[in-house]
Length: 170
Image (cartoon, rainbow, N blue to C red; front, side, top):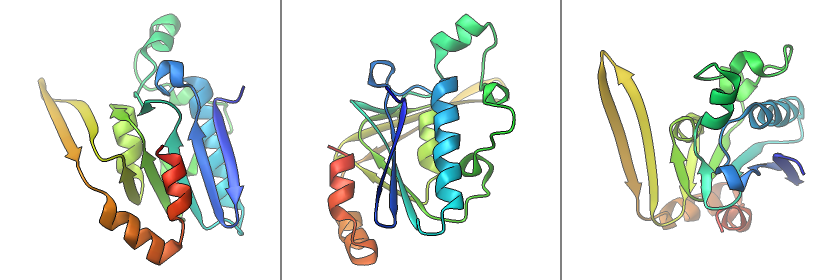
C-alpha cells in the first residue's frame, strides 16, 4: 500500500495522502512520498494543476508524534527524508498552482500544508488549527470555513475541474 497516491487525469495531478488510520500524519514515508509526487508534478510540463487531499476523515493531522517519540527527536524530520530528495512544494520552488481539497481535520503541519497551497476547497464545516509558540505564549489560530459553493463555481469556470474536486472531498 502506498502512503501517498498519485492520479493523473489530463493536465491535473491528484496527490492523495493515504494513511487514514493515523489521520495522514506527517511521517517520514508521507514526507518522502509527497516530495516524490511534487517533484514529478514539477518536472512534467504536461501537468498544470495539482490537487492535494487526504484519505479518510482527516486531511492531515500534522506531525506524526508517535514516530517522533520512537525516533527520540521531536519536531519536523526534514533531515530524515531521503538525502537528495528536495520537495519543491515545501521549498517554494514550485511554479504551478496547488489546490488543497480539505476533507477533514487539518491540524499543525496539516494546517501549514493548506496554508502553502494557492487555493483551498473544503467540506462545508471544517476545523483548522495551528499551534505556534511565540515568545513563550501559545498562539492558537482557528478558522471555520462554512461555504465553498462560490469557490467551486469559480474553479469550474477557470479550470473545469469541479468533478475531480468533489471526488477528492467526499
